Image (cartoon, rainbow, N blue to C red; front, side):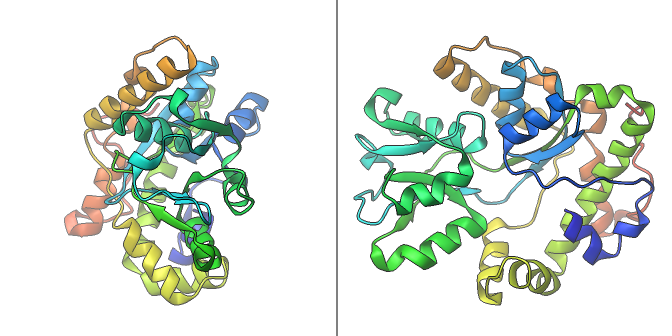
Length: 303
């Protein structure tokens, strides 16, 4: 996000100061929330659920929907997995506090399998690629640059990936609920949600600049690979009505509660609906509905 804001020219226009933290994965954001050193984190659809299970009070303040799935199920070199029907008996990388963990459970359920039909190997998502290459696991959900690099490096040895066929397209920005009690931070988060959506849409609308600055210079990929990843993601979508996202999150929360023995909760309680229309307003402005710099205040009170 910092890079997108910088390239779009908006980083210096932010009406507040941001202390950027490079944190990878939902469990790390939860730890940082608990330590009071992080106010907001961008994650998949599972970390806010896991945080709530552990008693941490969090709120989702942005909902982003991708046009296409985020993850594929990458297979280790030599593993015979042509579809989800072949997952029975396989060792699968599993991170219970992250979106990848929920994805594995959904894929198993769709295939008519339970956790007893496979071996779930609990790892941090940052360890998935290495676990595949060392044959520690047969299957692991990978996405984006990590998936592309893995296939580029190990396809010749028999590595591949399969589609999972389950819902996998939600992304959230979530915050410590305590941060919303601070009037200055709450106002800044309203503004940040708006600038964040604007920067993401800028990157999609300026693919060559984004590819060169991020995928080529920062991530070490080729321009062709960068274009593939942008096309694979599709245009970011920001629903002005979060009803579907709440319903999907409830399904995931119920699945995880059943799998882990956690107490069920109402998913709608972790969505702050005062932020609901911000992304849609920015997307509408980007399509010509009005200036993208206008304050995001329509039909909601400042948290």
